[in-house]
Amino acid sequence: MRKTKITAVQKNKPTKTRTQKGLGNKFDIKIKEDGIFIHPGGQPTEVVFRIGKKFQKIHLVAFITELPDSGLTDPMAGTAGIELFVDGKSQGHRSVDRLTNQSFLLDCTQATELKVVVDCANGNANWDHFHIGIAQESQAQ
Image (tube, rainbow, N blue to C red; front, side, top):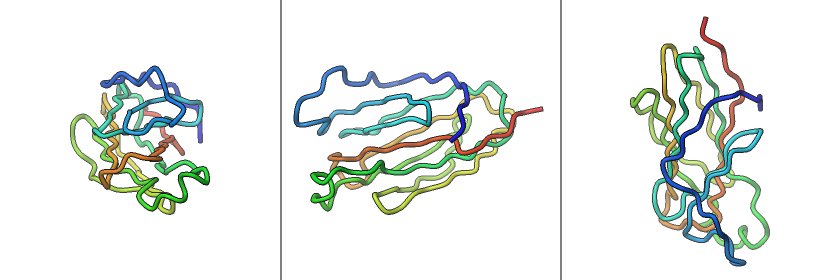
């Protein structure tokens, strides 16, 4: 994954405290060097990026992070739905799980905003540790 500076605006405030039991039904967003971690919790969680007409194309890869043994024993764990919006236009809804990644090649010519919406897909938010990162981008000219 490449390091790209994009300003992120979080609509939902991430949880500030965690219990020893983990995130459970709480949502959380963490911006990392290689992408963004989102735990959707019981409601869809979104992050908006102000991309300011800087990109022509953006290639994103979405997946569920590796689950610990306790997550692997739950057959409902590790699924998430994702919908991407470029300037408010949906790019379609897809799902990822612990075995399936999704790749998106987005045309962002003249786009000012990229929104990522993540949900728990199957009604169970346990271990839905979703990650999305930029695999490649081309700058606007």
